[in-house]
Length: 245
Image (cartoon, rainbow, N blue to C red; front, side, top):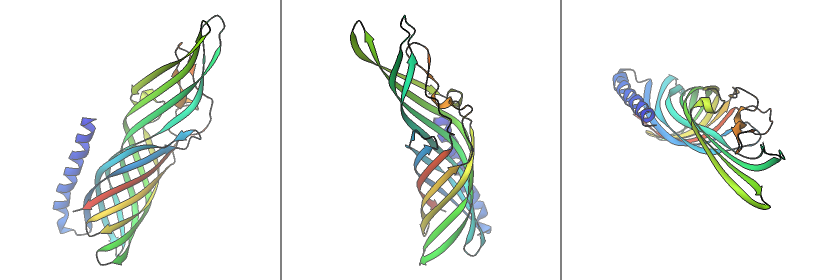
């Protein structure tokens, strides 16, 4: 995590240097941003999770009012799941045990957005910014946690078993690292301060298999999960504050 943040900080610093060198061409504007994500998956059983974004931005003025916007950012997305799961006990009775499962997938990306925008003047030094385009993202790593709560009956007594499984890396998720999709948003800019609200609509199914997102192992070592043919596509609402140099 520290190495990732170091890369982001170095990228922002490099952007600051570029902004100084680009002063001769006033069409370029460099900046920094940070904010909060409310991300989710298109899977029908998914719930949103909170993440964050931080990075550098660059705008290029096309004509009066119109501009291209891009940059490099570190952003965390993913989803949470609450569901029932099953596991076959390896015992004489071979019972099917039903339990509760809580899953949290924290997916970390380096992301490059590219949008075309338009500035609408509202007052002196104040404008409304509209933008639309797309994004491409590469998953650096992930942190995943799955909690299982299982009722177990032994010698006529019923008790609850709690198990937690943690993993790091995309090879543990069954998800692909690469993502891309549509991006649109609206913002307010006052002098050099920018407030933005963006929405990302992923177009790529990140699952490598139809049920990869529910593959875990229960107390007795048997595969657990639910059958679901939904697709995992990114859905992310982000709020950010930025500063233009």
